[in-house]
Image 1 (cartoon, helix red, strand yellow):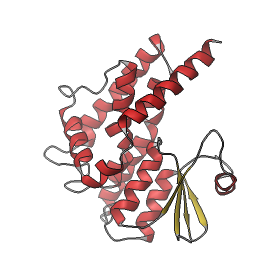
Image 2 (cartoon, one colour; image 1 turned 180 degrees about the vertical axis):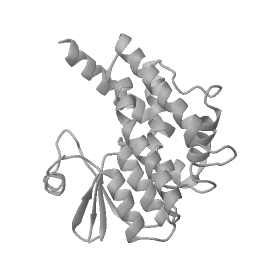
Image 3 (cartoon, helix red, strand yellow; image 1 turned 90 degrees about the vertical axis):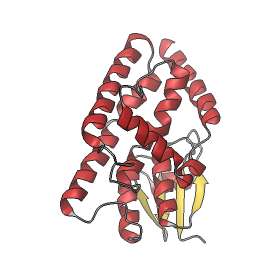
Image 4 (tube, helix red, strand yellow; image 1 turned 30 degrees about the vertical axis):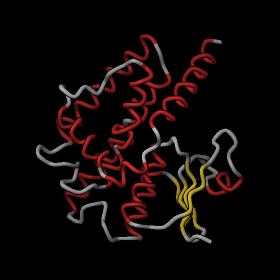
Length: 223
């Protein structure tokens, strides 16, 4: 029996966060892809409050919520640290991780809405991206924390990959390279790291699945 198991969904950026951390640490694990329309008894047992993925199970003990899981992984396996040791730099990193968590609903609204509501969501998302461009990224650095991938980079994986997919099938453009050069460069750097590139969900498969889900969601709203 594997000491580490991950219950997740291949389409979830939060699951991808945990996969990144485990891969960067070189931790072997068993992956269980959950059907979120028919959640397994184990998922409901391990996460009875939110009933969501990801859930990391370590020696039979479940840990829920991606950010909590990332902190747990970094403490249990301290090699290849994902957070700085300096207290100030760690506090700064945790601020941006919280910022990444808080921007999730903005990206979600792009996916779930259409018309004027979607245009408003795009404006909100653009402002958030401008804030990251201006205050989050350091000129001349490949990643948020410097020259190595950190927990902050992992936290922003939805900006690196999922946002572009939503843009593609929605027809909106919120991440414009000429307006956000540092952020665009970071995305290229992040996605070019072999470990990241090899584990990102297939773009065409994502587009097909998300487009279908969005159409179903919008159709149910209009009924």
